[in-house]
Each structure stands twice: as C-alpha cells, then as structure tokens.
Image 1 (cartoon, rainbow, N blue to C red):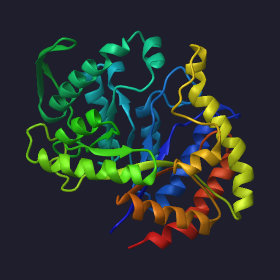
Image 2 (image 1 turned 135 degrees about the vertical axis):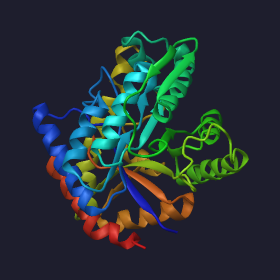
Image 3 (image 1 turned 90 degrees about the vertical axis):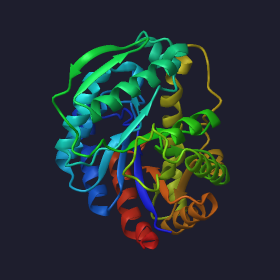
Length: 342
C-alpha cells in the first residue's frame, strides 16, 4: 500500500508578533515541501485564537510562492461566509499561482458561534453551504453562471478566469457522520475524518461502499481522481526521547484545548468532543507523541488498523514554539518518514 502524509494546521495564535508567526510557519512549510509531504490543509476559523488564518487564500498564496511541490488548500472553506462567485475567482487565481497545486476543502463550519458572529443562522448553514457549492462548481466549469436559488441568484454572470486544473481542482470534505459520508460520496470527494484507528477503518469501509454505490453519479466533483483519498487527522509531536516529548507536549496540548473551546466558553458552554488531557487523546488515537521509534510504531499501527493510506499530521499547535515544531518536523522527515517510503 502506497501511503502519503499531509499537514493540518489551525494556525493558532502564538506568543510572538503575528508577522513573525507567519514567517516561521512559512519556513516550516518550506521544510515540509522539501521532505515530500503531499498536502498542507489549512483550517478556517473566525473570532477565535484558534485561527490566525481567517482568510485562507491570503496565506495559501504566500505558501504557493515559498514552495514548489506540496499541494495546498483549505480544510475547509466555510462556504456560508463567502459570495460564491468571488470565491470562484479567488480559487482560479490561487490554482494558477500555485501551478495547479490547489486542493479545495469545503464545509459549513462546526461552530455555531463563529457563524453567529458573521450573522449566519447555523440552522440554515447546511442549505446555504449546499447551494453555494453548486454555484462554485458551475463557476469553475462554465464561463457563465445562471442560478436561481433560495440564497443566490445569477443570470448569466460571466466568469473570466479558469482554474489551471480541469475541470476543477480536487474537492475535499471533513466527514464522519452517515449524512456527511453520503454527501461526500455522492460528490466523490476526498475525505479527512477523525476518531480511533478502528473507527477510521469503519468510516473508510462505509465510504468505499458508498463510492461504489454512487459510481458515475452526475454530481461527481472529482472525475479525474480514480481512487479518492481517505485519511485522518492526528496531533503529532516527536522529540529525541519519549520523556522529552511528553514534557513538552502535555502542557502544549492544554493550550490547544483552551484555544479550541474559547468561543464555546464565551457562550457559557463546553463541548464534550475535546479534552485537555493529552494521555486521554493518545488513548483515543487523536494524538501521536513520543520518540522516533514510538511514533513510527504508532503510525504503522494507524495504517494497519485503519486500512487507509493517508495520514494528516498537525505539527504546530497549542503551546509549541516554532523551534519545537521545526525539530519535530525535521525528526519526522529524517527518522520516521523514510520507514514508510515505497
């Protein structure tokens, strides 16, 4: 089985000037580019320290200029927050600026509070998302958009740009629920999910069956991709020894937790989906932390137990410094990644 690695990034706020954070992240991605990672997946968040990249296309353009091979894209564009025609134009620009390396992740957003601050009704966000996606696909594949829906109306709106990849860059979706898997399969999207390795296996098997059921469906968004990628996200940190890795990662993970739940706390709630306990996260396969040998074994277990061939790792998160994230990535590239080369 040929495997591939990606990078997932919230671009969380760090205790350094913002311009320094951007520059250091770009340096990290230059190293990832040289190491041979397949794709850099950037989250979109608003009104929260979780996301210092609220406009993914701005940062991804900088990534495109500083790298040569690694693919890049949002995971995901929060479609209810975009004018679809404007987004079509930006996608076309970025796909061409990157030399055809753009990967398009789409979704409605998981936080009702982020959408509320943008005056978007969370209860309507699914319908807005699905209609916006239809408009975007038309805009990428056709030179004029005619669409009369509940949220968007266009009568022959001209599109003067075209993406470099034909008929469009690959589409991705974050999926775990039966509804989400069914939607992604009908559109033949590549997916990233979460959960313990055995849960990922179940998700992957269910998705493979759905893909077969929807074979040759007219809503196929990835006609050029024969076998859509199925992968999972893991927080990741490798240090020279297990003890050093844990001493650094345990407090850093608490910072990540505080960042991800901040908006929920602001509204007097706490989501049960997350934990501040790194050991608990490791027990549920949500995090991989340790020495090179330890993480090699955990990654091997992931591929064997999940039956998937794509693993998306988060290298820069919570309280980790740039130097710690960079050393982790360098160790991964030199002492872990080669063990999974085909």
